[in-house]
Image 1 (tube, helix red, strand yellow):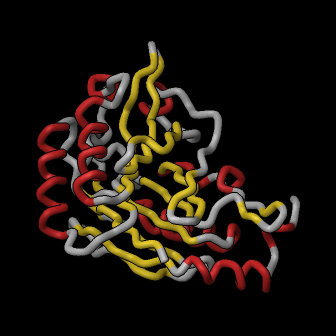
Image 2 (cartoon, rainbow, N blue to C red):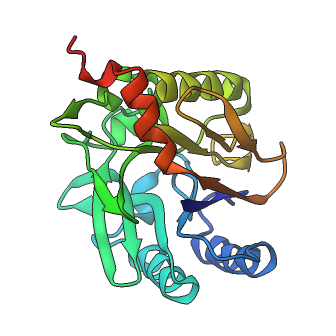
Length: 256
């Protein structure tokens, strides 16, 4: 059994230090039980705005240090994305951090139209993280629309992954699409899916209402955060149920 804490929060555009202080207070107020993994929404500390480079550092700066501190303080793993510079290239980079340090990173493959695609460099490969005895595939927002990128297969009885994570920043008009796509990804990949989305207005004036949710491997919604509300949604995933499902209906063994 793995316990997730999905942090549905408002993000003040560009106010990194203020956002980090707010997260600290939110965790103190709402995280009343132990979790194995905390997942924050996309661009958790700065949000999206016209110029992402002004918040980007080569090592993730204060935002990455904050994530490490949270992992140590709450004795859990933490997942979040932030803008990172490598030379002249800007990446929307996801960090998976344990109390011992960085366990993995993933650069967003499918960049959204407009400023993100104009400013960022797309990633080239997926990252699988093994933790708590299971395998996780962390992806980012717009990736949810590209099923081939999340394709789950099984080789010699072992699936690529068991849990699919999406750190998202879907605006309100497309929230329903996000949830439908997440359910579809769960069904076709026989995996649990966790979506973490933000609320509030971003730096471009787009409204967000949330849509943070957990789905089981058959596409059923297990839990959902309240709309327009800051909430840490806690859910438990009985991962031992995956084996009989995959054995009973072995679609992961099929090749396209």
